Amino acid sequence: MRNLSFIILASLLVLASSCSDDFLDRTPPGNLTDETFYKSPDAGFKSLVTCYRGFVSNFWGYEAARAELGNMATDDADKGGSDAGDRPFVTDLGFGRALSSNETLAGYWTARYSAIGNCNVALERLPEANLIDAGGAPLSPELKSRYLAEIRFLRAFFYFELAEVFGGVPLVTKTLTVDDRTKLARASATEVFQFIEAELTAVANDPAMLSATNLQAAELGRATREAAWALLARTYLFFAKDDAALFAKARDAAKKVIDSGAFALHPQFQEIFLENGYKTKEAVFSIIMGDDPAVPIIGSTINVYCSPRGATGGWGFDLPTQDLVNEFEAGDPRLLFTVLQSGDEFPKLNGTKEVLDFSTYPNTGYHSRKVYLPEARRGQGWGNDAWTYHPIRYADVLLMYAEALIESGGDKAEAVNYINQVRKRASGSQRKDVEAASRVLKVAEKPLPDIKTSDDLRKAVRHERRVELAMEYHRLFDLMRWNTLVPTMKAYSTKPLTNGKGGNFTAGRNEIFPIPQIEIDRSGGSIGQNPNY
Image 1 (tube, rainbow, N blue to C red):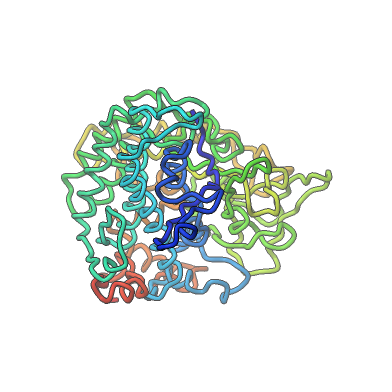
Image 2 (cartoon, one colour):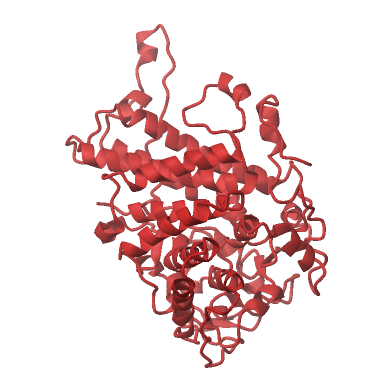
């Protein structure tokens, strides 16, 4: 049983071209053809890892674009960087003026369809292949079925991310030929939803898909039955903006995760984001990235991308806004591990201190603490770092369940109970940054009050999502599915310190983003554009 940690596969598929000369037809020693690869040791697992690499193999299209949309395009974070001319198209996302030529959107599309393509290849080739394991023994049917279930989960995940940003997209479920490119057509958002729902339901009910209750330590980071239910709950909540009946389905899917007993809120909030955060019982589905010189492991670049400039050596992007900071209640220790401030100090390996200094570049006064790594945790070259991204964690599941209960007319007391579980964990967490030498921010020893059934529960759960999941790339998609993106950003544009960000958001257009023009052109016009772009 193996952890994925995103090993870069040395075995590349080399498709041999036909030739009449037998000598030229020979496969060069050490090269694998498409045919011989699937007969090689561990080809099934290597194919699976290639599919997981969709999360990490394209930094600008996946990691950076995820932050640029999920955080920077909202009221939670500004772009940052060296100055206004540093990736200016990111600014356009949050001002509501993104064009179909936007580089972030083009990269986002490409990264996910590349990942989907890898999944499609594996789903076509693995079922018929006579696979062997690393030792040369025949791969068991059960293990092959598990690989296939995980790959279907991943493909559904990537399609969900596309649907969040673009709405309906082409549903590509097989390897395409060159001629297919001009025959692509967009499926409707409903059709994409139905595909994702069917895939995740099948995976969650597949006996071959391992439950998190049986996941071994060496398998952390791999998809499970509960992760499929959690992603299905998120899918239902997102598409419930157009069909309120889906709230009940979201409720039931999230409850399956809770009832599994596989997860729990970790007692200390900040430890979720420290070195061993992926080992906590809060991790429902995590992308574990590493920096190991002994083997080629893909590390994360998001940490240097979003860390302070200057002596720290970061690139200075993804700056939390004052509006986000103001959302936190007095005494909420989550703020301490959500933002950094100029003057914060962290130990260096040589025994001195790294003093954060934001004075040399434009900033909001804050950086994200959740991605910042003190020197001892930085990878070789600071940008190939051991870090874990949590696409789904248990607090998110509890809040999804509470929200689905509220919106489906369920038991208010039960919804309040789950919201308060998240708040109690926060309230009981340390008010000291265990990695810092000193922090400017001081959090009062003041417990967070319980939410009551008489409170505005919709407002309560939305507040809780914003502060609990702050800077974790959920904000944009929460606003989109609540049908509040346009009014929220319009209102934000009138507040102090916003520079009018959000002022161009327009109803009937900015509820969704434009399809990249380059993809429309490549399709010969068979892929249509979103309205009013």
